[in-house]
Image (cartoon, rainbow, N blue to C red; front, side, top):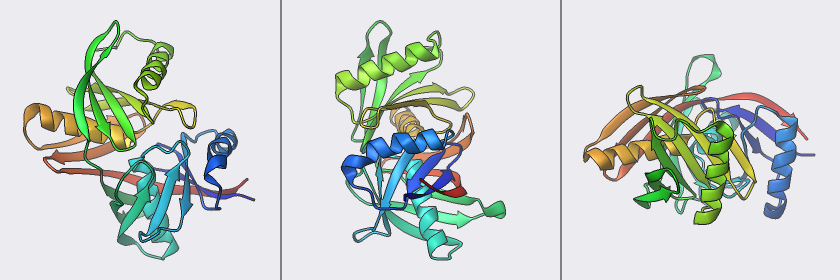
Length: 257
């Protein structure tokens, strides 16, 4: 029997598996769990922290800031705390990720994640569409398509383009962030080849952080920005040497498989 939590970090519905599962079995189990929980966009696997408060491995081995926030909320719940500062070891990140959790009204936590800084911010070509910024982060990279770029693509065309570029570039995970600076909005699309999943996500923590890092680098100044995403808002504060992302997280239910 597999025990799991279904969690809601700003609409990016996440399954966190509490039962130990061998790493080689995680991708196939993740697909089965997402068949059971139709709203889920991703699956992570929890284990003892190994010097941290908790370890989290995403099914595709990618990094996920929203899931890190969920893991910190699990730490708080398991310890009977309404607030705390936790260190989460996350797949795709070289160092433990600090997460601050505070319980709000209605059983919803506010979480702030110290996101890993980008390894590089470069430009790449999307053949037929021109050049775009790519923010290379630990465990995932994000291409930023600022409006009106790529606005003529259908969803299926965007998904095919993302899959092709991810495999061509050899990325462990790749996002295509449809970013509108004027309206401060973001529509994230993410492909994870290790789990063979492609989702129009309801929110994307690392994609939000990538947009903040790119804007801060482009304008040579600190950035504090709240982005409206399909299921809610995420706030990013970006400056030289710092990326802090704030969102919300709640537990929807406990389940078994």
